Image: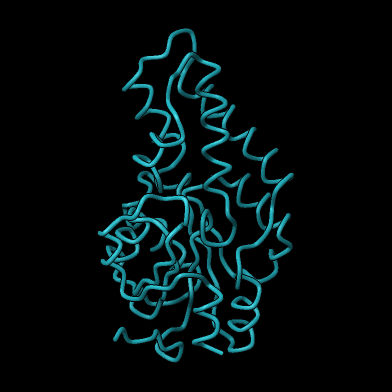
Length: 222
């Protein structure tokens, strides 16, 4: 039987954003399919499983190298996708089950709360504003500002430093393999709550703890 994560063992809890706080993975697939098709791509939502957890610039470079679109730059495609994502989040933003209850509990227990995501700053601001959870977070950071995105540990290490928490005293909540590898490389413990639209990924077992939803995690802590 898997051991439950003991909150007393941690000074800080750091959240990924997409697929953890908000069900945005389907929105990313809509935005990418829409923009990619506009530049002549034949990629489908199923293809995007290969790039889950990467920064959008890394995603666009990956598929540009694969398909070699003409008359558009990767930077232009990237900006179109980000703009489309802002529109989709504003129209569809809802917190995933258990998010607000978990944030409330962490505040009550005086735990530091961080956010470490591959999504860009404008999307962090949009999500937190639309979900009305800005005031919970003591530090938010985008891998946009790091030389390397996930699975490199930089984004998690930066957030831990801003929180004033030792990596070994940080618990991360993630949904993707790239995110889990990033947090483990930062020497943090990881809860995996798999994003439901992903194909089953056996390697998610690399996480230290596993839950079906954040509601279940909250119940274990409450």
